[in-house]
Length: 158
DNA sequence: GCCAACGTTGGC
DNA sequence: GCCAACGTTGGC
Image (cartoon, rainbow, N blue to C red; front, side, top):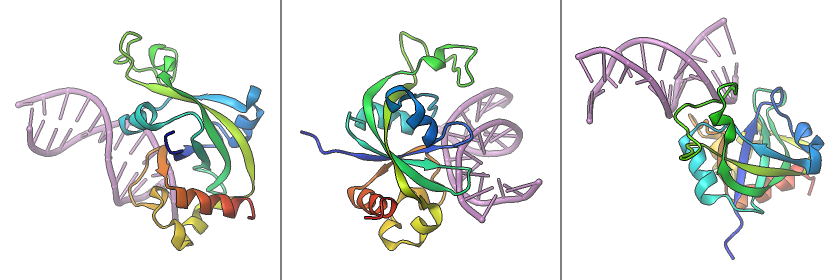
């Protein structure tokens, strides 16, 4: 049994919020539109069903982790890359050789309170988080067990 | 609105 | 293969 991994997913709430995820049928959504190879490789190589997700709101007020989700479907071709009508259409990606992948995620619980970027920066236990590393802009980032535990503890008042 | 930190593109 | 130009991300 492989070790459970943890991730941080960024989303701009004006585009897709945690509330939007929780409002989906079965609270489940396809995480499509990823067009970064490093993130694609995380999806392809490392994400397993059951992995934990910190759901982070970027370009919003507050900037914060607002809830928890999990991986419920492992990587498969992102069909939005094949469709010229889609915003993230990529003619280099073909159905017979897909360049881009997506996973399915399911919302689990909203935090009792948001864990803000500010307090993540100020918390010595969280200074290792890639989120607060200068120049780190990946839309999906790996999170360690220790970081996960601390953020969960802050967000759930435990 | 600014700008640093990238990733991508395309000429050479 | 190099690198300048350009576009995007995302906090401030």
